[in-house]
Image: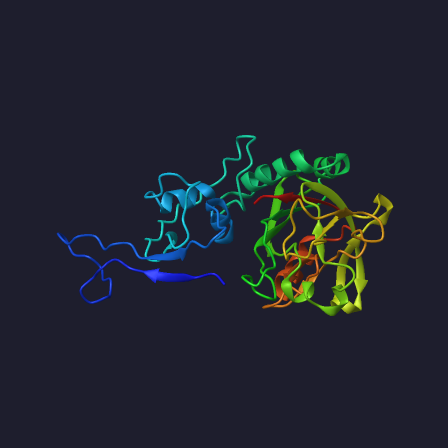
Length: 306
């Protein structure tokens, strides 16, 4: 059984308050771990989800990390560490070929600059057809995915923390860009559903192009985009080790366990209703469908951005 206890610096009242000018800074409060027989420094770091360097930084009193004794106490967490100031997210510079990290902040950008920005994702991750479609003025879908595990730390119904973009040029050459908050990954509710007992949930492999067509499915509320199987099954990485996250340890499939059932469909307000599909809440999905216009087939460029 792991033994942990809270250790705090001395304050007269036991309560740390905001300091006025001239007061000494409050001593840090720690969570301590009591070393057990057989423990190692690196093992303690892993047990508390810390890097070896982070555990060293918390315990400068340890001169040799290879020599720790049972009963010795090590700091494993700072309880009253000040929250870091959030750094403003820089707006992407569409004049360079460098893609921004994460979901780009396009607030205040012109549509021409947005088009130039999202074109870079097509240039980098698009296949020949996607590039041809964009050059011809056709509507191309770009997906930007941030990696979100579906562990207990996350909402059971998933999160709309990705972005889908519909971009095209009209007959006059004017660029158009429509952005939608969306989801491209499974949520915990579906990962734990009994229907997934033999086939674990997954997601489309990122940094690739897929091809979709308009279709209809009453089980998903009507209009959907379905994989165009003339281009083969989309490749899917599934949570084969069932640790509620998808990473390099999981397997990729394109056959029976491929992505023939990975659609674009509507979700709910508080539940993405996704076992790996691309979903939006009802209102956004309606606007997304309108942005697709009368075109029936689409290149979908999916980028893993964080």
